[in-house]
Image (cartoon, rainbow over all chains, first blue to last red; front, side):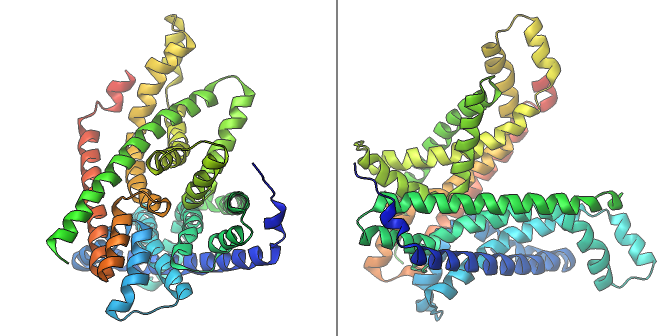
Length: 222
Length: 216
């Protein structure tokens, strides 16, 4: 068995460009997913039973089906229903919508975890609903939703690899292409796995640091 | 979208259920072995389990599967796509399940382990008869969750050529030019399977002995 990792590493600039696409789609996708998830959770929290029930459907569907099927439906089925997107926008949209369903659940749990007494107190002090959300609910939720949010961000990072299957030129597609040009599939996949591993460990470490930093506010909650 | 196409998808979902069920059970076995290694007094084993769990949780499953499908033949091991898919899914879910079980094993009351010790149980007996049953009971909801994750993740084995639900949908979509109907139907089938698993999980959670009884 001939194993030469050098032929892959020689293509460093190409790998870096794939890594760049992966990181950009991941960060943009996570940001959009969290924002959309927050909007959904807020609408479910304040919108009354009807809006709550209606919004529960897409959340359940997105959480109950594989991400791969979702992006296939969007990318291959989209043009038949008037949604024709290039790979990168399709990937970004798919990742954001998929992540939004999970973030909606994370924020929903966040809303439920804030003691009702705090909201009532804000009411008594004459806070508007917007002020209550911005000054009471969000800061208190932030501590609770941080660990699952970091977790979800890491899951989304790994899901970006699936975007290679709709030809988004991210890291998995790029490194596999190098592997087949150089006739070194195994080497390319080993490099790919190691880069993802490092990236996930790095993201996890940053997340833990953030949790430690913000845990200083935990006392203020009591 | 004809009934015939839909029934082909339903048939292929049998493969999805089969692969997922085997992988979850094999993964549970491996996860228990990993937990035993973590509870042992051998430092080498601690390092190994930490590395195993970190790797399989840190690399996208798609990359793991592609790696496995290229690695085994390079090592001279030739297995069917089905067997390789099960190995890949099992190793990945084992890492997640071991992480879930960690919480369960940590929550086994110390007093129970001490009493088992006093009653003359060997460490192996304590592990098999005290720790495992309690840890499994405590982490049962996490196991149901993991089963749903694996059902969804099994869609990735389509990439390495196993004809399960997602691969069948891809094939049918390519031959009929009806990707919207076909992928939507595939999604619906996944959704139904997952709802059924979740319902079974909720039912079992109610019927299983409560923690008060299990710990007593």
